[in-house]
Image (cartoon, rainbow, N blue to C red; front, side, top):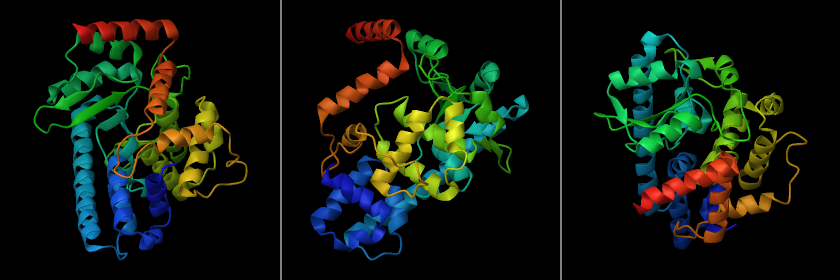
Length: 334
């Protein structure tokens, strides 16, 4: 693990550890936190502690930015709720918006990008029409990309609102339809928890399962330190009761166990007996998760490439993957 990554992990786990940092250490810590989109979470953790004046200004700005992002995310969720209310269907918030809407510890300082929602697959066309009617527009102009999302992916092609310039991803499950693992999206919706405004969030166990699925079954581990901080915060708030059974139900036992182990390795997450048995392959995942230098720049290109290839391998069977990459290569070369 790089020193910068250790600095960030240590600061999130034990904010008092930053008292020993010199100027170079603060530079590396803040650069790493920005690169991993954890600067708001770090700022929240360090609130009230003595820090150098220059760092204090950066952290104060980051807290303000995180709060602005929280308000914007909640407003976008409300706009989606209003657009979809006539359809009378469950709308489940996912990822960062779910954390802040439910007031969870994982949402404190959390960077939030797109609005991600989960809806019943049989109602996706109605959801699409309602959002288009309410001012959202397609992001993907390429007919091939549009068809690819609709046939193979776990979500509609992304939409952006023409006035607010905010994107929404409409999911009907949590992993691509071509993936080797097939979770139970109807189960996530059925077990979801209603908020006061009628929107819903996944159950605590499903929040952890989804975080693990997003990181280890559907991606190249980019942003993995942030995702594992989510896991740490969720475990700290809810524990792991029922998580193993829920992970097994979704076919994600291996991914959830790995997420829990790596959260413990990075952040010292307190775990019940039996969860922290390390695997030799964990060191390879840590090598990828922490592949940045003290300036926040990406390093270890071979490792990154390997996990990028792995992410595509997980998403599609070999023949489909070959066809897809060939089509994209031809399109990029046109």
